[in-house]
Amino acid sequence: MSTVRLGIYEKALKHTDDWDSFFVQVRDGGFMFMDISVDESPERMARLDWTPAQAREFRAAADRQGVQIGGMCLSCHRKVGPGSADPKVRQEADDIFRKAIDLCHEAGIPVVQVAGYYAYYEDSDDGQRARYVESLRRAASYAAQAGVMLGIENVDGNDVTSITKGLAICDEIHSQWLTMYPDIGNLAEQQLDTTAELKAGEGRMLAIHVKDVLPGQPRRIPMGTGVTDFAAAFKELKRQDWSGRMMLEMWNDDAPNSSEISSQAREKVAGWLGDAGITVASRQD
Figure 1: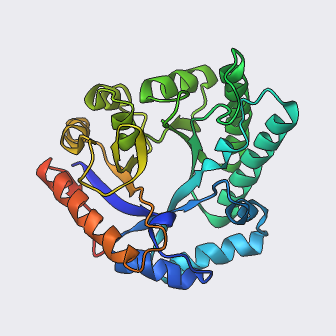
Figure 2: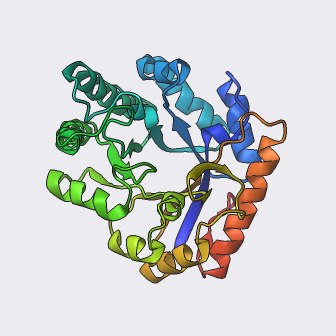
């Protein structure tokens, strides 16, 4: 039976420095897990330097509130490109991978979501993809030692824009610790065939991002108001009998009612999944 657990992105909820209070928002919104963000901001990148004790306390707060940590969204590689032409930047990107994997190991986070950007802020060159692949190859080797999965996210822009492109990289690296963490919204933003792309990823998708988009606008589109073909996506996942974690990716920018917005989006997604015949696990299950 195809069954999913719904989770929420950290940035969808109101920020607080108290993790217990934060996880209460996750729990009270009806979500079973949260994905933590390590983005380009200095504040979130500083998490890569947490001590083991800080990492374990983060996990303990989640445990106290009955919330799982689904994964880490490691989007700071958009700023520090693994495919950069600058060897110093590539070394920093490698260091970020290692620190992220170490943090996940200490905090009991099972998945690092790898952004599919080669070197976002640099002009494209013929070697970017190859340098990205080699950085990711090193990261996959380190992740295997730590017992942490890596999942490539198809992104906006011009690099790993599809599940198909991500799978080609996975095949090159050929590690059991590297697979896909697809973003259904980004497929729509790229105007790709959602069904065909998800079919290509069958058996190789460890979790899925759900969001709504418009062409050229991959963020901050309220759920159900954009062009993401949820019906087709969920129909294909049902055909695959796919089960796993599905994270709602939202940016509510600390809106006073961010918890309500997130909960309403969860109810919409749960309804669409139900229409496709996919069971949504509840907190009582």
